[in-house]
Amino acid sequence: MKPLSVVVRTGCDLFAWFMVIFGAYVIIHGDVTPGGGFQGGAVVATFLAFLLVAYGWNTLRLWLQESVYNAMLGFGLLCFLVLGFMGMPASFFYNFVAIPAAEVAKSGHGIIPPSGTIALMDIAVGIEVTGGLSLILVYMFKGIHLFDNYEIGEESGHDR
Image (tube, rainbow, N blue to C red; front, side, top):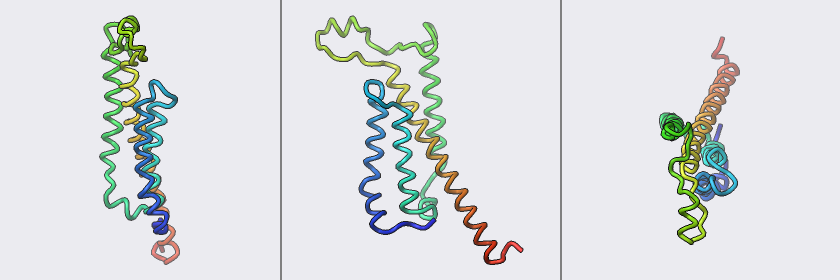
């Protein structure tokens, strides 16, 4: 896949980073607003899709490291499981970090009580989904690249 025009690449350079920022916002605020780890992770992974479409596989494969996305996938899963098991004396996935509502009401500030481990689990899921969906995109583009090479080889008679 060849890079698109200079206009598309410039638009990608300008706006792709907003996708990462918005995705991080959705992940971080997912416990109190619509959205969450999965939705935010999908938005952040769209950043890579944007770059792959604008610049093409041949340009991005030079600096793209699959190990980073594998590490994100494993780290997010590990964090999620550790947070789940840390509440084990009471129950699996027990919300041990949350401030009791009585203490928040006693302070008189009228703030929404923090969600505790739910926010942390949202962040872990966001990291995991970003890594997983990015890996799916990388493997899909690798497959397209292999298929393109196969077709070129057939047309030029190299397969015979």
